Image (cartoon, rainbow, N blue to C red; front, side):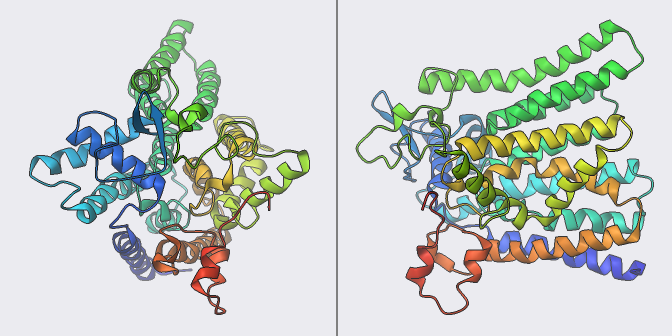
Length: 446
C-alpha cells in the first residue's frame, strides 16, 4: 500500500491541482443567460436597490416581464446573498461597468469555490473525529479524491444555484450523521441549511420533507420524553421555515405570489422571449409517452448527458445505498433509505418535468444537489478493505480527467461558454470543424 510520504505528496498534488484548476478556469465573464441573469440581479440590488434588471450592465434572456419591468426568472434569495461580496467591493469604488471581468471572477470564487472548500474541510474534520476505523494517514486523501472526483468541481467556475444548494444539503447531513440530532444547536443548523437550500433550488424541498421524516424516525427512537421530541421537531421546522418565509415575501413583491418567476409561464410572454410552455421546466410534462420518458431518463442518467456516466463515484455511492438496505435496521439504514428516496424523487421529477436536459450546462445540473448526500455512505464503506480505497481512487481519477475536460472546455469560446457533454467534447479530436462542434448540443425529441 502507499507509504506515508507518497500519501502526503499525493495530497499536496491534489490540493494544488484543485486550486489551480478552479482559479485558472473560473470565468472572467458571465456568458450564459443563467449566469448573466443572476449577475444582473446582483448588479440591480447593489446599484439600484431593487430587483429590476433593465438598467444594469448585464443583459440576459432568462428574465420575466411583470407590470412593465423585467426581472430575473431565478429564485431571488440566492442572488441577494451572492450580492454581499459585490456590495463591499462597490463601497470602495468597483462596479460592473468598469471592472466586469474582475468582479465576475471574484464573485464566483467567493460564492462558489470558498464555500465548497469550507464544506470539504468540515467533511474531513467530522470524519477524523467520528470514523475511527478510517486510517488517519488516508483520510485527507480520501476527502480530496471526493472533492476532485465528482461534478461539484466544474460547477465552481461560474455562478449557479446548484452548487450552493448541494453544499447546504451536505452540511445538514454531516450534522445529522455526526452530532446528536436532539441538540438544539444541531436542529437549528440542520433546519437553517435545509430551509435555505430550498430557497436556492426548489427541488431541495423534496429533500427537506424527506429529511423531516428521517428526523422524526430518529427522534422517536431516542430515550427521552414526548415533550422534548415535540420541541425538537418544532425547533427544526421553525428554523427551516424562516428562509422559506423570507423567500416567499420577496417573491410576493416580484411576482405577486410565493413562486419565483420561472414558475409563471405567462410572465415569459413578451416579444423577444425565447421561452414557451414547450421548453420551460415545470410547465407541463417534458415527455409525451412512456417510451419517450424511458429514453429521456436514460439520457439523463446513463446516456450522453448521463449524470452517473459523468460521476462514477456517485454511481458507486448509489449502489452502496441499495446494498446497505439489506443490513440491520439502524440509524445508518434509515439514512441510506433517505438518500435513495431523495435521489430517485429528484431524478423522477426532472425526467418528467425538466425540459432540454438541463440546457447547455455540464452533464445534468439538476442532479448536482444530491451529490454530497452520498459522501458519508462512501466514507463509511472505506472503513473495511484496502481494495475499496483503490476502487474509489480509480473512479475518482477517471472523474477528475472528465472534470478537467469540462472545466478546461477544449472548445474555448466556440460554444459561447457552454460545456456540453464530455463525450461530445471528445469528438472534437478527430478533426471536426468548430461549426460542427457548436451544433452538437443535445436537442430532446430529435
